[in-house]
Length: 120
Image (cartoon, rainbow, N blue to C red; front, side):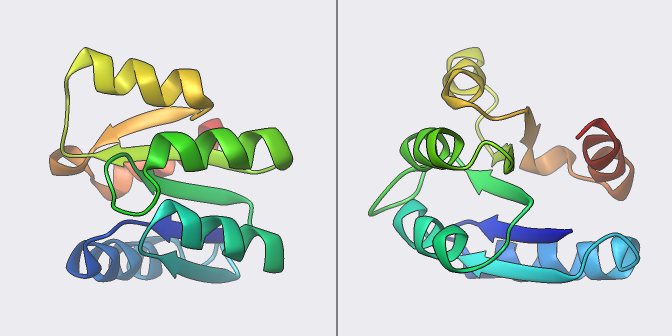
């Protein structure tokens, strides 16, 4: 499985990637990174990606639009939304766009990620 982390915060991407590497190295082959939705589209066009961890709010192209485009074009790619925003409207918007799950960034733990990966 190949993973793509999409987030405009470089420090978050690095920390999340480190957590994946420390806890799930047996479950993935590659981890790619993108800093916005537009960049994520280029990566899924050029590389084999199975799971995308997608931030909701980013410059250039937000996670909602990127999720819709990826889901429309690549039915086999699974999107898990990530955000600091826990408002019901934010969650609903990402799920309606095609995300399979929504994780609030402050609540990310290896156990939660494991359950998401098992669900997919």
